[in-house]
Amino acid sequence: MRALVVYESMYGNTHVVAGNIADGLRATYEVSLVPVAEATAELAAGADLLVAGAPTHMHGLPNVATRLMAARAAAKAGSELRLDPDAGGPGLPEWLKDLGRRDGLAAAFDTRINDLPVITGRASRAIARLLKRHGYRLVAAPASFLVSWDTTLLDGEAARARRWGMTLATASKTHLPAHA
Ligand SMILES: Cc1cc2nc3c(=O)[nH]c(=O)nc-3n(C[C@H](O)[C@H](O)[C@H](O)COP(=O)(O)O)c2cc1C
Image 1 (cartoon, rainbow, N blue to C red):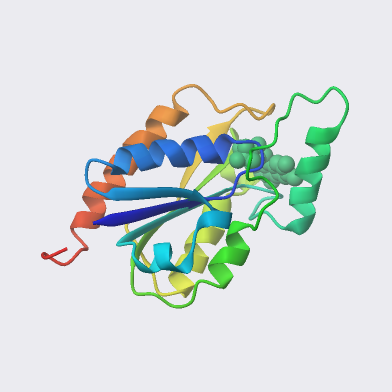
Image 2: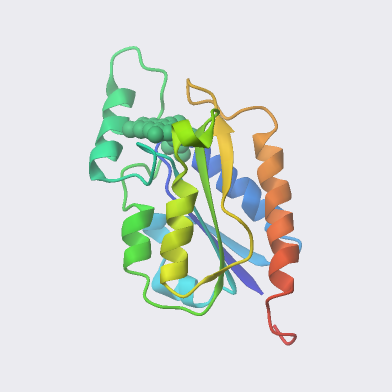
């Protein structure tokens, strides 16, 4: 069985979380872990499970303007922010829009600041909506992994992401046909 973990990330947090989710899935799935730019239609078509994640920007999904803001913040003199190697490439919402309709299994995640969701927003809810709109069935509720106000992944979140990956693997088994 194959899983595709696809992520958008400007500063690397969502990348790290995606990597840990992929590790959690590996006991059950052959996993491809890729940034959006490398998530080909073939990879998506061949996946029994699609796991998609992005950072929360302005209470929702990143867009051209928020990616530019993120890049500018990193470029400021004295900034400690570092851009992920794939930052600024094609984004997750654009990729999902072009994905076409599929009858597959999926899960959505985000990274966001450690505060109440009503204050921060959650990109994962928008990702989940887009996945469902394309015909995917969600095997778990959308999940958020938390960073501090200075954009550092909180202690324990990487391990929680790995456990979430394991949970997804277990949950998705009940949805897959017996021969899969
Ligand atoms: C332009 C911009 C807007 C943001 N807006 C929000 C927001 O509305 N809510 C939130 O929780 N975090 C917000 N953040 C913080 C990011 O969600 C957080 O730092 C995330 O972990 C970044 O992921 P990345 O390292 O994969 O880029 C914003 C960050 C940027 C750069």
